[in-house]
Image (cartoon, rainbow, N blue to C red; front, top):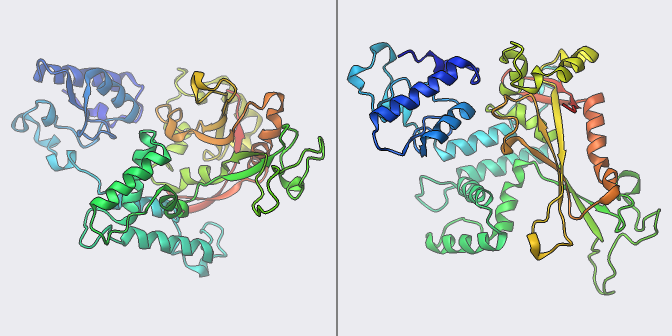
Length: 416
């Protein structure tokens, strides 16, 4: 049975889809009566058990482990396999060290922390980071190298926090619940452990990884944002409503009437090229897409091609990003509170392959509005519009991990 389909980069090709069917039929034959088998996709890595249907879906979405040519975990005997396809079982069962993963994250965030300052004048080389960024880098390295408790070999302080925060997000744990279990874990560990006391302290450790958000005050009546030229005002120039709530005279802290959260898109788009996991995939639409008049990706559509003809200079750089925009409101409390709604605004990069570009990991929330904006949605979109205009006109200097060089990243908002 030919297994060249495993190496096929086009997971929508007939060869690849037929190969998946052959694999699932092989697994059914060698595992009679079984309802679940090990999933050999790149994410599950033969460590998780899934139904046959889910395994097929995972193989299309994530691809199969390229080294898994001998299906010994699904019934194939090593003695009967071709010697040319011989692959050690250790390669299939390889598990990534979480401490190595955390170091990879730090290297993605600061890909040129050790750049030679004498190379600053060369355009292709990254500009060395400033003292504040280098201080963050050193603090992250310290936490990544510090043992969670004396003689702990499996977890550093940073690794433990990343794992716990990942679980919090994945299973939608509230901050109160997270604080409770963090306290329980801290009491379970030796008394000289370095685990943070609560969510707030854990978040402070992760602040150095970037991708934070900005708080922008808004008028109570949705007239305007206290942003840029209006940033220093205390009252709305349109309705004369106060920017802050009325509090006691003894209170020093001013509490804004309304706050909008804005998550800048530039650092998130830059991170896609600074990471080894996505830098190459961001050029998939140009370098690996199969152009055979079959609609598999937005790049196959007429709108994309018409945009390329209209703006050939933009299209000539495959690393320039085409963005989609989505917005909708929902009530996070269901029937418990009919008067509250939350409006998130998302952008997502179309450059990625079709099995990635619409996954939640790559959908970037840019604006979070905490109540129905009504007809004033344009007021809350202003920071995003300003940033998109700058990305289209000027772009932003970005480090491409796959080539080791800097380039000017530009972006456009496409209605595909």
